[in-house]
Length: 340
Ligand code: DAH
Image (tube, rainbow, N blue to C red):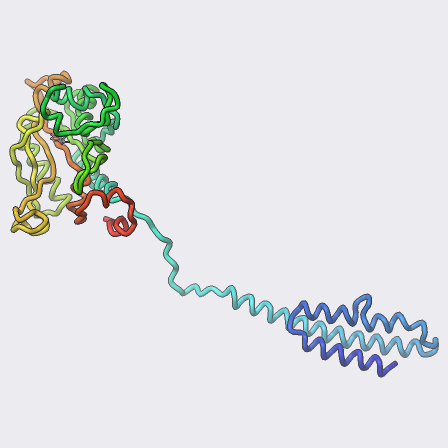
């Protein structure tokens, strides 16, 4: 009997020490100490041991059990420590490593330029009026001194929704709404989408404009010129100046085309300014008395100037974009480069 117990003990110890995981250790414990385990079987067989030998054999069995259990506990501790070490190793974080930067988007170039323009004009005291994209023929044309048979209508290929309603072709429509709603002094800008049946490298059927309107006592073309000089310095750089060229718009008299001195070559002539030293950026003028009178403004007392800026045009010039379509294709390779 003693020998048998000795064998169980040796084998158990060897198996325990060879166990390389907690699961394996559990199995070994079961085969020796479990309900159907070897040592349990010996205990069950005690009834066959002669009564006088039982205390002795009982003591051997207990010793064997204690020895196995103590080795088992030791090995369990060791394997648990190892499992924890491996877990720590796998979950290790190096807090000194540079962080992975989350991808960050930026505003669309049109929105960026629109915000820049809005900030500049707001700093000069302009209020913002947002008109509607659907307009009536009256606000988009007639009230702007462009009646039904006026040749200037041909300049703006219009998307009509019905004989009365259309998609506005110009933010100028907002001028009329503002003057109908408010008495002078008026000093507003009106940014927004406009629509024309026009499509090439520099024109898109939908684009963005910013209208400006100032109506007050004694407003002249000089006020317009002074304000524009300030404006172009802020948007293109402090060495940039403006030049006014005579032009025609039905709602202004006189009307001008505004050029800026080329901010790329400083006026010497380059590819951007096509060798002229000047770049056309917007249309403007002194508000036609017919328009003011149509809105009930007393032209003996008040006068005004107005201007219309193409936001895509400014964005294309500022960021060197040669095709307007690049602004509407949502190609991140293009958009990611413009974060002003
Ligand atoms: N509405 C004109 C256009 O779309 C731009 C413009 C020109 C607006 C002169 C004005 C202005 O307010 O005075 O081409």
